[in-house]
Length: 258
Image (cartoon, rainbow, N blue to C red):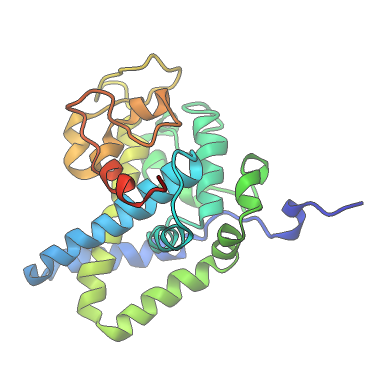
């Protein structure tokens, strides 16, 4: 019998070994912050949050809302991997296969229905190894680049951080680690606060509790329009009304294939 692609790889949930030290160094970077790095910190947030997680992991790989060149795909996947949120395969499996399919039910891994702290961070440590089925991502299981980032995720994550530390500890701390730290907590806010019914509004009548939350825009940018995304998952832009600005989509327009 022919071996399927899912049998050829070891599918596992992201190993959150980087989460605890990230919190320590993130707090340390805030305590010792050097404002000479302010523009590099902002640039880092653009790279890791906007391009890595929001544009690549979320909109391109999870929802296939746009395509880009292979070079830009690899670069943004590296940004995503550096955010310590898992390989593209594991991230997309959770998001596409479980969060959207079973939003705000017992099968949604990070629904606030299980409690705020579970939704914010606790769910990451409760996922069973191999507990998520990769059948929801057949496209990524045929993608050699995604398979590479999945197989060598820990080596890429820790190796890249170690190399940057050796080059310049201050640069790593303020231009890389701090933006990654903010990105991590931004998406934790996204998975929790954006699904509390009292904090926002809906443009789409969806079955889940996802909301657009205006006051989260300064931190989450376009990801704050969460109900718009759940109402139209194939759209690369999350803004429905003109005033619902989406800076991540502005970047996508620069990197996507015409």
